[in-house]
Amino acid sequence: MDKLNILFAASEVVPFAKTGGLADVAGALPKALRALGHDVRLVMPRYYIVDREKYSLRLMEGSLGVPMGTMGEMWAGVYEGVLPATDIPIYFIDYEHYFGRSGLYDENGEGFSDNDNRFLFFSRAVMQLAKKLHFHPDVIHANDWHTAAIPMMLNTLYAYDPHFAYTGSLLTIHNLQHQGKFYKGVMDVLGIGWEHYFELEEHGSINLLKGGIVHADAISTVSSKYAQEIRTAEFGWGLEGLIDINSYKLHGILNGVDYEEWSPAVDSMISYHFDIDDMMGKGMCKNTLQQLFNLPQRGEIPLIGFVGRLAEQKGIELIASSIHKLLEMDIQIVMLGAGEKWAESFFSEIAGMYPHKFGCFIGYRNDIAHQIEAGSDLFLMPSLFEPCGLNQIYSLRYGTLPIVRATGGLDDTIENYHNDGEHGNGFKFHDATPEALINTVGWAVYTWYNDHDGFKKMQHNAMSQRYDWEGAAHEYESLYRRIIHGRKGV
Image (cartoon, rainbow, N blue to C red; front, side):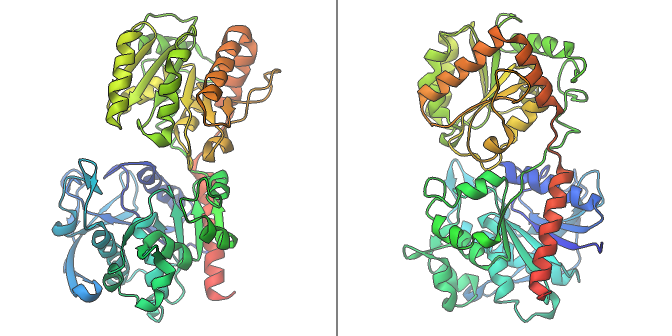
């Protein structure tokens, strides 16, 4: 089939800048699409944490004119490089006033007051850059609210621009909670005309993600279950009605993972390698993990891991409400994460109260995350909502059975334990209550102690599964082609 020209716009990309899962997707999906033979180009802001020398970035000749409505035309620099270990070009929009800051979106937890202008500028710059490069995209793949203005611009400001004559747009929603809500005067900066105000309007302000949903040729989320959930009041964050109306163009495509990094057979960050046919190294990794967290080295008890933000979304309040009951069981728990200050203090105190059963590291270290995945027997992920989730997929590969709440990608990837042990790869519950969490952990612990064969069969089931980017890339390719055919009226 013909190769596609794909322009991928994201506010963060691994390894250059990351705050969440969007960066992982933006750093991995283009590689998988390139492997299918497509011409993929990435664009992101040149935050000042992006090291120009480390990544051998080169400054392109000439400036990039970026019209900003009533603010007039601004001029940006553009750095170019490649995604590491690939030939995929990546371009960085350089504008010190907007991106020369220590944070991507905020500082000390406070969002920048000009985030509206920052990302409208970036979105317009993406369009202008395509013209400067003489790159005619078949599809522009926008991500989250930061680039949701691109589908709007494509259908209005660039509707009659021959450069984008048949260009379609895909908007991927990685987390609907964040929508880009600003005062309505931003319409003058966006420049698409006030006749489009009600496509973005929400309670007298504008919602950039709402406008992107209206104008995008297709919308995707990062799991099938999340695509269903965001049409409901519980998970729709006020946009469920609009999304339901636009459900004809909504698709759920599960994120993949990079098994070159997250596999116990090759993981460079763990002490001992193991795999489905030789699990001896997992027990040795467990001993190492217990040492790391100053816990007694007891191989006979289940060790439960947690890696994630200490935030409400991740179910951290459920864990806090349940922790004393959980630690009455003959188990150990290790935790890695940072976030809400009360949670950091609370779990640090729990570690002091239960030094032989609970260990925590406040902060984030990738090497410790890998060691927790490898050395734990079970992995706790009781999220209130989880668009996709990656840690449960990592856990499957390491034979670390997930305990999850049945939401979003967690529900899509985890199948409950069956007494015969022939089916299932973890344990899940539905109600977001401490009782449900305690009972499900208790169920997993009971299985550990009383059904050794069943537990081992589930580990085998888990480690046999693959959620790689190749499969996801094929789904995106199919969706891109559908968008292109629709745009051309074929």
